[in-house]
Length: 166
Picture 1 (cartoon, rainbow, N blue to C red):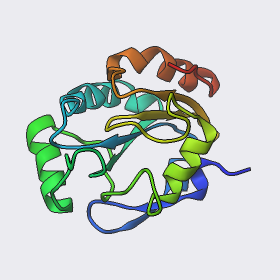
Picture 2 (picture 1 turned 30 degrees about the vertical axis):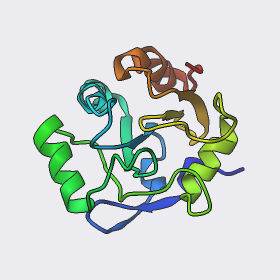
Picture 3 (picture 1 turned 180 degrees about the vertical axis):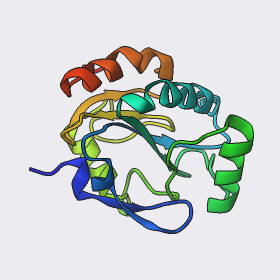
């Protein structure tokens, strides 16, 4: 059975990172953008990360330029924007496609595990997937779901490895 831990991705610094590095952690995977109406969610994501990191929680940010060209910058610009404007300290990865022929394999898998309102497709920036400690998807959340509203599901997953859809 495929899990999050079977994938790898390139970090903003250009390093290939095995997502097996996050085995045993509860992971929130988010496709992000710097020029989106939902961009202020970076602050909420960072707050959630800081609150629960010591309990075994991590957020993985995947910038994406597929929705309204709202992530036009390169990796250096993205990293600088996230750090300067929101103090982002959770891992950020290189820009990816989340839909279509060039979608990152991780997103093909995430969408097959938890369909959304439009079937498998990602609808917009800041779609979120909650992954349990075992690497299996336990929840999918719309871009409108504020990070603070995920805290209960994240805590449940930290306790027993599961969560609920939101």
